[in-house]
Length: 329
Image (tube, rainbow, N blue to C red; front, top):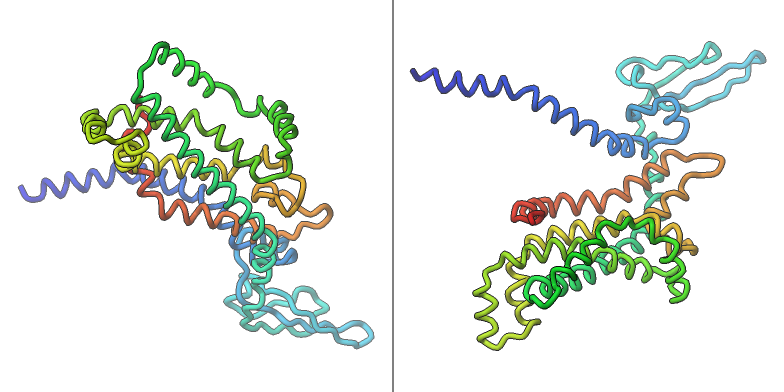
């Protein structure tokens, strides 16, 4: 009788292995670009063209070549993986001797120095746009959601429906009038243009989510606050924000990622290289004649680090906000 539960658990494990296999396959596919960026970032063009898929082994081979007239030349190359666990093999018949040695200098760390120096200003510009835009977007959205959730006035449903129609408008359809408007306001080629447009564009979705969440809060809390003489600002500060922390955190992450990954508007309105955001700056890494793959991949990997860090530290808050009913209603 005692073996029955074990058999039941064992049968469950046997049934779950296809699911785990599929999940592992998706994880490998998702992580493959990061792996390629990381291992290529330590290579020069010769190492990349010789073996683009595997990391470089930490060995170099010194070859002595003897010409027909008896002169000798010495050449150093990176060892292949086939030579990493055996003796070095001459690359061609003219090689007289080939000696392998442990050499960490085959890894081009200077690619990372180049990438960090190149895209450092781009990261600073992007952080300014994303942090400032997220702060003002969420601040205004909380006020707007509080208004729609707490006050019922004539034709309020019509006003709310008209407000939701804005969610159906594709952002790319507004590019031309938006460009003309920014030109009239003398905001072209400024980071504040990205902040203002990002704040305005993020209001509909954030107010939609926050309104549903605020409507579900106990009305007794608001009535008690009003009896104590709390103003609207006090109710938002002492009731709405403390009880909506999880959903505000989730929306903050989504808003930050949206501002961080914005590319089209930045490409259109920014002209000075010093003002480029990360998305625009990265496309100029692609050289016109020669692609320095190691330097490009190092810059791409550095650009992805902030988002990886944010995801790792905020993943629990993000999941908690979604499970708290962020998308219901």
